Image (cartoon, rainbow, N blue to C red):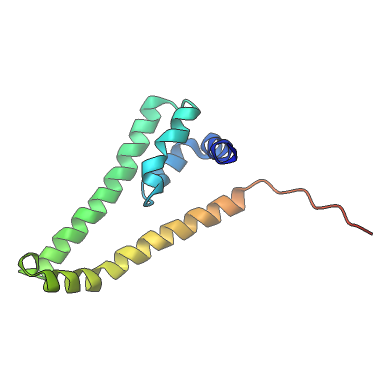
Length: 122
């Protein structure tokens, strides 16, 4: 129950931006629809943010696949060569995803409401 309430609060706060960035993050991208539905987010706004975020994510994956195919011809026929190509080229993609995740967490921390200081025991 507490997690659902927290998700609702975050959706109320970040609504459109939250959906956009959530579509860029693994795991979260599949779950963002639930809190958006709970707060009854505008369907058209949700759809546009989903289209933009998912389109960006799919575009990056398509670019990566095209680049890997161009730089490593024949890798699709040889599993070992394919894995070597993925390992060599995916480091930048992984760093970009991790960087986005870190920025998202920092944004959440900076915009989180301040907790009241605990009373001193003196």
